[in-house]
Image (cartoon, rainbow, N blue to C red; front, top):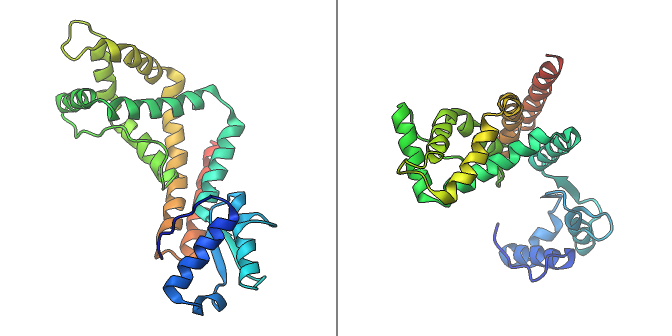
Length: 238
């Protein structure tokens, strides 16, 4: 639709940005045609008294404008709430490890190059660890876990290499971090948690991706959500 600068991220300025952008694009014809507003679940947007949607209702003199909280975002929040209830140190370590491995290779071209060599020595295609979070939420987490599972042997081999002072790839500034990462990667609890978490996230990601597709229908999304619920119930029973 367009991009508009918002001087201040409060409901008044966001509402003004939306109305001015729409008016610039469609003049006043759009005002009588608004039926719903899609957004995330922030209170500045969905607040019942002063949220952006409520201000749009007042601005357009239409109390029936429907607020739609993005389903993919709701799924992400539900996943995070479920994780918080676990409150396990293992999961917290898992998330920290995924983030730190991503940063470890992102900001060091030498580490990335040596990781590629580790992949080559094992005869497999190289994949660098990716970040957990991102604009697509759960699918980003799935990719990070998938890449770690796929490249586990190569990553462990490279981290072990960094522990050898006599090796050309060994560097003092990276050795301490590598030792910490290696300890977590080889921990039995972590080795059990990673595949379990991957199974859950893959299941939920399929539903999230269906929600985010432009050509998905309500039936498609419903089927994916029902399928995810059935799979998770099976995991729970097993």
